[in-house]
Length: 301
Image (cartoon, rainbow, N blue to C red; front, side, top):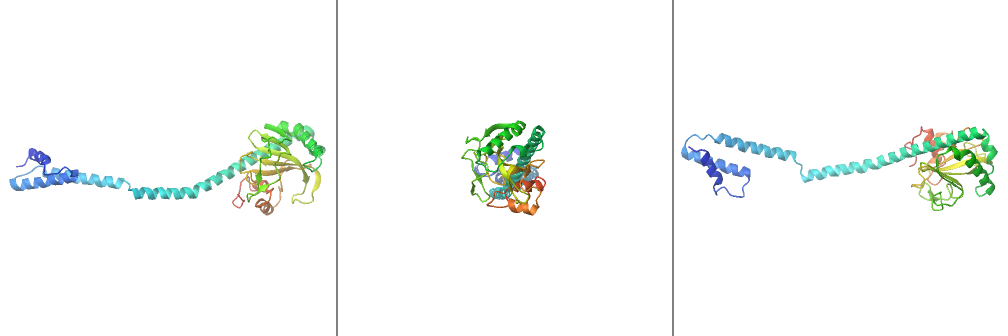
């Protein structure tokens, strides 16, 4: 009869071979046991036990194989993740930029309107008509009216980081500051160092000058009496592009509040002007407000 000592002897025999795997070793042991059993013709109590060991080992190895990933599977998964990221991340970034634009624009709009209400409370409802005359940016008389109106009635009601007045200081819309059309070409007018410039606490640039007064369609213009606010909602930071971070707000002598250019016009008219690749896109602010303070899908971005 073969006993445990015989099994131990088989495990240490040189016939097994040093390079065999554990599963191969067990198979060889099982072969020796069968031979011993055949020679001794007696009962062998370990055969079932070793069979179970061999079976359990095979099951565990199969289980490990099922839980592991091959290199090909890993690379395919990473490739799929990369494709999904390439498709979704740019859209997410654009969506975030649009929301930031609307939030900042709405804030500046609200701040300027509140300041104008306080200004009228200080100087009366006709304060603009009585203090602003003319329509030429390079006219020193017009500048004196703008300086007087802004410094006396408007600036005291704004939270300002810097009051630049009319200056060529690079920190206040200096000559290095550039603005761009939708097609990427540089614009030659708008926020410039020869206007009355201020920087709000949140970093927004506001450039103020006198302007012609026109109706909602941009027609029937008459000289004198109005102010135009050129706004860069994130200061000198890019893109410095009309309709993205550059917007225009007007005050007319008879208006009860500050409004975007062409406010109240039809959406079609607002969209046509706003989506111009080569224009100043003056009506973009009015379009965003018209659409419930959001940038819609047909808005040129």
